[in-house]
Each structure stands twice: as structure tokens, then as C-alpha cells.
Amino acid sequence: MLRALGEAYPDAHCELDFNTPLELAVATILSAQCTDKRVNEVTPALFRRYPTAEAYAGAERTELEEMIRSTGFYRNKAASLMGLGAALVDKHGGEVPGELDQLVRLPGIGRKTANVILGNAFDVPGITVDTHFGRLVRRWGWTELEDAVKVEHAIGELIPRKEWTMLSHRVIFHGRRVCHARKPACGACLLAKDCPSYGAGPTDHVEAAKLVRGPETPRLLELAGIVDEVPDKTIESQAAKEPVA
Image (cartoon, rainbow, N blue to C red):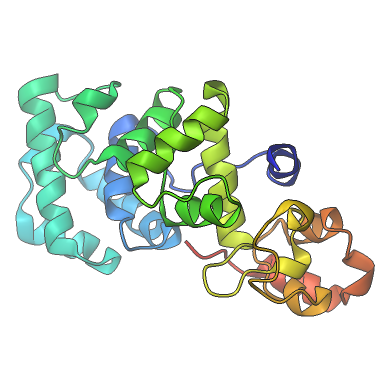
């Protein structure tokens, strides 16, 4: 299954746009209960207005809330961003630390967010157990655990540490594009033969192909061995759709 995911998503990556650890921390906080696409629409102006931890610490709350309103829960998120800025200034010289134990003590940053920051801004391997990751590893029978921290440790024992970050990206990509929560595209999944939950979604190839999303659709269907059975229009239509977060 790891090899198949690697073939399907060789270039899987964090889909939040950022240039610095601070930008990634801010974007990840905003991504809670919000799509990455929406966050990426908000952050360019936000990053220009607040380029440093000091800027967030001294932000005018009403202005900050208005800039992030469309990401949802904007009052709580604004409080987290302002608190994060203040904590970074007070304890870390305005810089985002690169250690898990320090990150999780910062406002708005839990273990999941910390692993996103470590893996993508500092190249420190980490497993990001978001809703997609947890759902898929349970569907695949890799673990029955529900608690995110326990899931992280359980999967970490199965997978070499150096692969943790890319594993997270690839599982999340697959969850957004193929293995959806309510109606997984089982009949168009390259993991079908190894998946104990095969049949949770439609197994008919054509019906399942209509559920696959994102620019990788043609390759995903080819890897699943069903391209000749699916109309070209269906493939083109699904490839053009934005994947859900």
C-alpha cells in the first residue's frame, strides 16, 4: 500500500501556501474547519499585513478578525494568532521554534499543527493525524485506535521514521481525492485489492470514477486499471475539479 501511494502521489505536499515557519503556523491555525483553498485565498494579504510575530502580537483585533473572517471561527483564530505572536516574541525571540515540546506550548498549536510545521518547515519527520489520515488508516486496518496521539504512535511503529512526513501527505491526498468520508471511490481505487474496507463505496468502475477528484485523476484511474472503461469526458471533468479539504 505504501508503494502504491508513492506511485500515485510522488509529489504529494502540504497544500497550504507558505514561505516561512511563521507563515505555515498561521496558515495551519486558519485551516481548522476550513479548506486549504480558502486559507490560500486569505493568506497573501494577511502575510503582507502581518509579516512578523511582533505584528501579530500588536495586531488590532477587529482588523485581524475581518481579514480572516471567511475562514470561520475567526474570533478564536484571531485570539490564537495574537497569542502566538506574543508568545513567540516573549519566549523565542520572535521565531518559530523547531522542537515539538516547544511548539505544543504555543497558543493555537496542538500536536497535529506542530507536526505539520516540523515536517514541512524544518524537515523533521512527523505524522499529521488529521481527519483524513485517521479515517483512512482505520479503514485500512492499520489501527483501530481513535485518539489522534495514539494513532500517531501506532502508525509510527509501522512506518520508517524518514517516511513519516511524506506518508502523511500521501494519505491526506488520497483521502481528499479518492477515499472520501461518506462515499469512497472503491471501484476506482488503486488500493482496492489490499483494502479490508473495499465496498464501503461504489465498486462499479464508471460510478466510482465519477467520485475521483483533482488533477491526478487520469493517473489515478490508470493505476487502478480502469481508464478504458471510463469515458474521457468523465476523466476530464473530475481532473478539473478542486479536491476537497
